[in-house]
Image 1: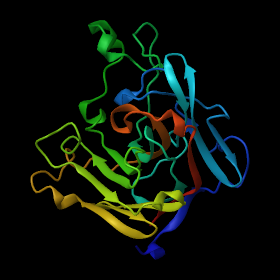
Image 2: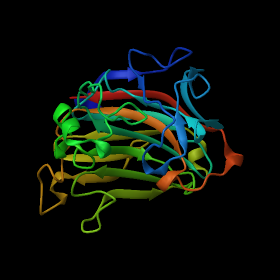
Image 3: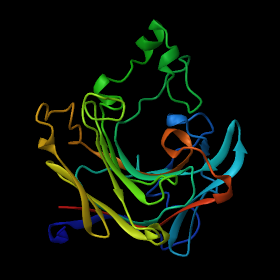
Length: 280
């Protein structure tokens, strides 16, 4: 990877203390049932997310919040910053323990419309389309099919699951390539690392261009997806990535990928030294 053609356009060096910089980060919060049958509530409390000693920590705790058995945090740049293409470099150390599911990933930016009064809403305040009537849909039409997951696209820069303590996952999701389909090859690569590798901080990076995604750990390339990898469809159905996306960092607890939780390993500490975004 040659960074000479790139320049830094956004970063958080976490060279301060307290809450994450509100000029750079928003939170997704709520104690409702998050996707993938995850067990956590997400909060913005200092117990779950804080900056100290030049690093951000997302701390997942065994504590009840409503019907949820655990609490954690989910930071997003939505509403603050988004990017189309670039080189993303995050220096981080993942938590340990079965049940932890930390991730660094991106979702497409789409401006949310205000939800009109009187239509059904979910616990997180978003429209509850499953319970909409015909009149509700007239007031608030459902997003176009291309803007719904997985058609909208999802970029997983890196995922770590504690029940597989020596592995990382690098993935792209689209309408044609996602884990729910069995008729195409998913764009997911699992890479194994030596015992003890994740005891230390490492750089997790990704280059995103109009033609490919390439994934790096400590500057070494471990995976690449080319736009031409799918000989059948190189259009939006397979490659919905030519638009702005925003960055997400979180730790989920349990769920479909996280698996059973080992409570003896909590709290889970997901520690990040810096986040840097470069563009040409």
